[in-house]
Amino acid sequence: MLLHGWGMNARVWDAVLPGLSSFADVSAPDLPGHGGNPVALKDLPGVLDYLRDEMDAGPAVWVGWSLGGLLAQAFAARYPGRVRHLVLVAAQPRFVQARDWPQAMDSQVLNAFAGDLAGDFRKTLKRFLALQFHGVEGAQTTVRSLTHQLFELPPQPEALSVGLTMLRDLDLRERLRSLACPVDLILGEYDRLVPVDCAGPVTALAPGRIRAHVVARAGHAPFLTHPDLFSAWLRCIVEASD
Image 1 (cartoon, rainbow, N blue to C red):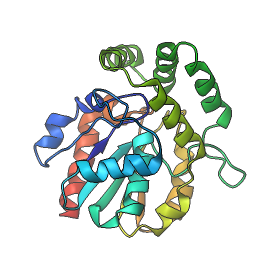
Image 2: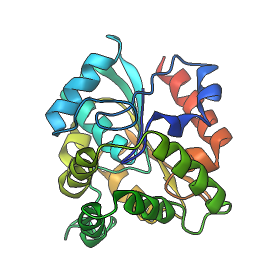
Image 3: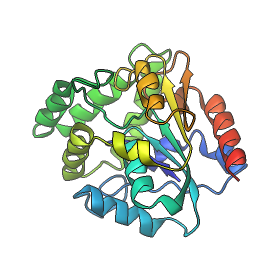
Image 4: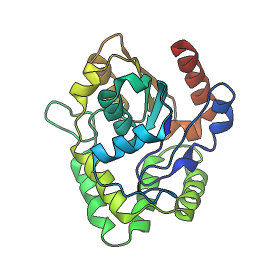
């Protein structure tokens, strides 16, 4: 089960779907309010129930990117029998800084995006995409491709607002600590939204059960810039979880 990030849609996985489909049955839904999904994104319980109804009954490997990683953590905590392995891609249990969690975004970054949504939400999304790939080789080409995919099926403005609220307010550290399933954390070396120095504190929540991997010279979307490496890691995870 692949969950995309804020503002995007399931097409963001297109580059890795052929490789993943060679060894696994893959589901990649549009989150409520995103892509072609007309269901409204209103709150966390609602989206978790939606995902419960969308997936097959059996346990699966859940892969969540960015906001999708937050949702995957919350889903695993609420429906532990449905998740046999959790993969967090450029995601962590708390996205904004706290006194005891400095390895995260400054809340003012998200507040600025939230304030800009009331104006030109398309311009806001473009700025968000550019931030994700800052310093990454070939960033302009990747951002242009994602922007084209995004605006073919733009998200609902309400979904963007609710998603930013989740990124700003959710703190899932205790839920992640209490999970029984193994967790793999995949981070980009140059990620400015989920910094690599979160690896130590996140793995310390459950030593031995949470592992961290860093993709060199990658930004916030390592599966886009390093699809072969990403697919190879997922293959190892899926095969180990069978």
